[in-house]
Image (cartoon, rainbow, N blue to C red):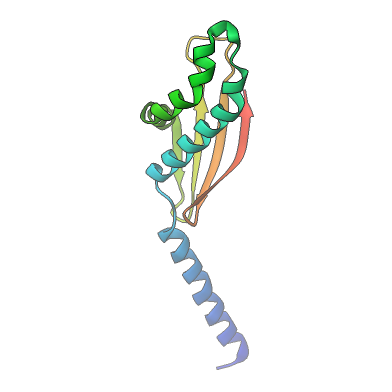
Length: 128
């Protein structure tokens, strides 16, 4: 067998092995929901809770973090209901749109996340 045939064979085996590893480690929708719930809760706790005006009451601003932690199931359900998944076998793309219905003045957010090798990478997060 010549060098090029062996190199081609080894390259093909390596590509097939990589594709198999990607397919096996493509994270599922439940894993994405857990990831997104954790990320959203952390974002709200760090960026929204400190900005709650005292007009709404000191109780709300001082208990904001615990309210978020106590309502993980509801946050996860909101994420689940507003996420579409495109599964490409080797990887998945998740698109989540969060908005407050019937409130035009409230901002909405769109997130796009790549799921690959049992990890998630949010590559787009924008206010729309």
